Amino acid sequence: MSVLLHLSDTHFGTEQPQVLEAVVALAAQQRPDVVVLSGDITQRGQPEQFRAAKAFVDRLGAPVLAIPGNHDIPLFDLWVRLTRPYARFASAFGTDLEPVVALPDCLLVGVNTTRARRHRHGEVSDAQVQRVAHLLAAAAPEQLRVVVVHQPLAVPDASERLHLLRGHAHAAHAWAKAGADLVLGGHIHLPFVLPLQGLARRLAVVQAGTAVSSRTRQGVPNSVNLLRWGAAAISASKKGANCLVERWDYSAQQQAFTCATATVVQPERAHPTG
Image (tube, rainbow, N blue to C red):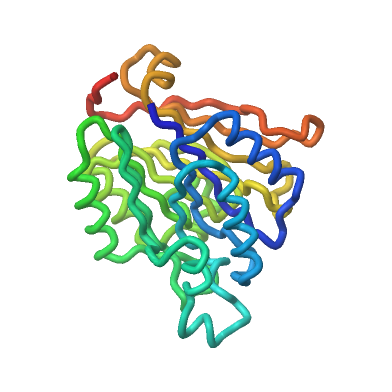
């Protein structure tokens, strides 16, 4: 069984120490196999913010798949933005902006949806769509197939459509056809699980809220996602091979993250249950 801890929009530079410590405690308790950071790791892409983020991630005790968000490209240092937009990200998390992590029962594919010329909006190119589709199609039958982006592939409300990833419809159709099960994202600080309709097969969008930043939406606490794939998720539903997506919200009263919701996602193809 694989356990994934999905964090997004940590916005280091606006982090809350007590919430940060609660994430570290949750990771120690749940012992994830992989930590996924789906962008906006820093608030303004400053070196000290990346150093703080890296020190935090190092405490979580698991390999990390990290992709940049629009906030991870320096906004006010125009020379760096135009000439070396990802240099500071690379110094903390490596030069591979589209990392791939393969576990025996899970494949995670990162996609860099940021563009230095854009301040906020993201996009995915045809070449990126095809690269991801090729990797998904080559996955082993028993692997859960997960794509990680920053800007959302889909949103639950029309008022959020301006935040959608440019090229989202093309990507959704191509990735579903290639076998994607989940697309993880962030950017809008709104956690949800949204099954998509009208595709070649089942595909669900899983969004994370802001993990440790004070930049939360009104009425939406700091939150992270835990994804379980394998024996624990299977026993939760008794319907075969499933992925269990849990949203954990921060409780100021308890100074800890507690499980708020649990959603079972059923991949369409049959996976081994071992």
